[in-house]
Length: 326
Image (cartoon, rainbow, N blue to C red; front, side, top):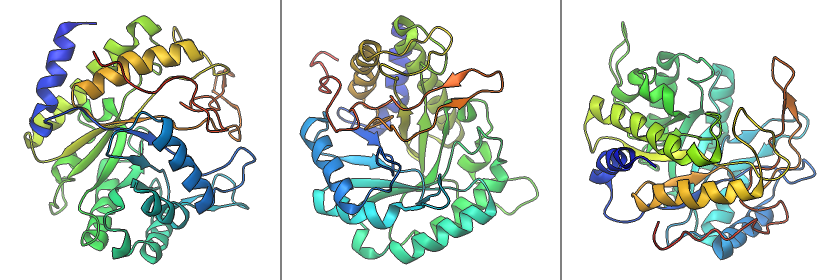
């Protein structure tokens, strides 16, 4: 690994941290049979993560939508199911609102309004509006007012509101209006105070031996650009997703899926980021056998059922404790 990458990332995140970063997990809304998780299912998820997930005293997960509508005839009420479980088990949740279209955003907002009360003020750590929306070519100045609306409505309960996107959308300036709150020909609004940056050595097509250096360098570029715009202490930044698929996943360029490679990336990439003080959400907690195998425009299959640190029966694939030297 390049020493310059480690030093640059350490300098970028150092104003925010005084200790090791916190490990969290991305958590799906469905069971292997496609049915929606209940509060009892989420409680079992939290028990497994608490016991063998390698988490410290701070225990956080993140979700992707207030209502999961992958199957329109079997929609999952995520927020209303996960929040009681998290509160009971001492977990915090970063709740995601889907916001790629105005119609979906309004529906998510309305549902959240009926669920999120002051009872969960200490359970909901942050709200994120959109998930890689900029990556899917939603305009930043279309997304910004949605973020501002959520912050206005729920800011008395949840202090951190922002978005999550791919590292390059922060690095290349695409997300600048969201970070600063400034859009051309519109009145300025407060910029976000919370951002999740997704970064994968895997989706950069890297061999496992190069994956950690690529992952850390991508994080550094994104964090560095954000701080160049708004300073060091304006926005709380976390790694929103990183991971590696295990046995049964689909290869991508030089990146090969296997349990061995997944463990290698976790022990080198994730554990190094944590040691540098970065809060990391591993994608994902559990394998999701319900996910259909998709195909790219060129006909290449993409199997995303095997990205879990745990199998879908909540058994870990490997020890999720970081080496003490990491």
